[in-house]
Amino acid sequence: MEKDNIKIDIQAFLDLRKTIPVMDVRTPAEFEKAHIPRAKNIPLFSNEQRVVIGTLYKQEGKEAAVVRGLDFVGPEMSRIVKEAKKLALDGQVLVHCWRGGMRSESVAWLLQFAGLKPRVLCGGYKAYRKAVQNAHVRPISYCVLGGMTGSGKTDILKKLAEKGEQVIDLEGLANHKGSVFGGIGQPKQPSTEMFENLLAEDILHLGPQKCCWIEDESANIGNVRLPKPFWDIKRSSPIFEVQISREQRI
Image 1: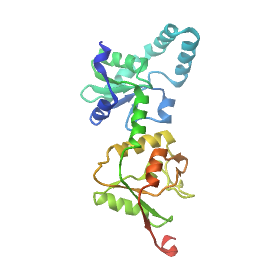
Image 2: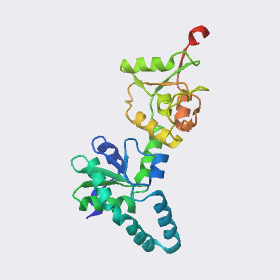
Image 3: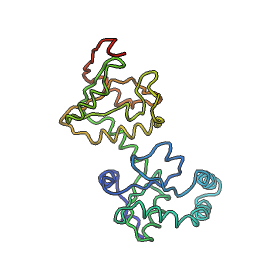
Image 4: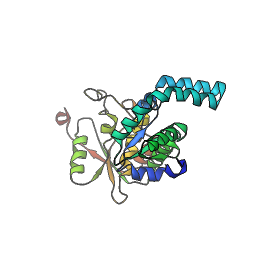
């Protein structure tokens, strides 16, 4: 297999993933911490195996680590191929690991050998994270909806979205209503890194011609934190305050 022929940069990856499934071959622990939204985790190594290989690499070098990795992967090759074939669309699948190195390249070799058409993301998840950080500073015009708890800001945002306005539901992404008891009845919150990924996904879909409506949140929404560049842009954006009586809010 000619590896260079199946490597793609981050822009090509972002375009292709609209129609081609994404396969994350990092460990389950890496994936659980944060991942590319809608990616499927088909790990090359378990959490424990990754530690063993990393330690061996530091102590005895690359060759010893590769041989030990083959010991782990050998019995798992069939599983990886079967899961990848279920995920692939018309035989195509996008593959990434942490840095676009040996793990993703090895899996791509295996998948190509099995008749699939994989493409490897150059730079891996780290390249995606750089794209996420760039998204947070996109020159988007935001309109901030303010008001005290219970004034119906979330309902207004939903109505704006129904009317075709651009809206980002920060509380929805954070699985938290933002108030003191905002986590009650909500799913588990994502990590801050995963929240940043989800926010970037919404920002990347925004058009520059219209403003995007967001709710006036503090720097933290529950346990997740707004990215500072996004927070700075929000603070300088116009605020539209919803004012209703205390009785209505209650």
